[in-house]
Image 1: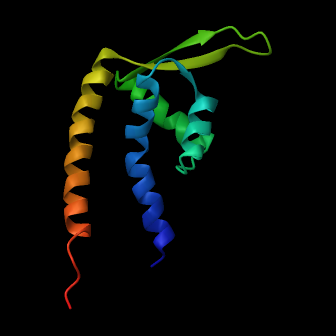
Image 2: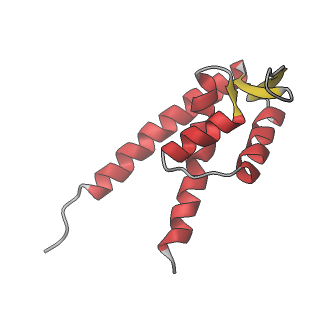
Length: 112
């Protein structure tokens, strides 16, 4: 068993949570999301991001609008919906609970 497979699954599990946090700060372009996620070492490619954004949109958690660009075609900017904000509050609590539980296990001393 390779650790990289488990690491990938762990990252995928929190990707939606992180994207919701990014779009909760304000309207954002997908390329900027990718840059931020890569900067946080949550490597993601367009083929992963766009289907996830579409799922968030069809679930009513995110929306987008087209904005004309001076340097090329119009851009899609994503933002969180009121339903998405409520959903994110629930995920925030889940994250805090998981973080507490995992750290409780990780901090326990090894048996001698």
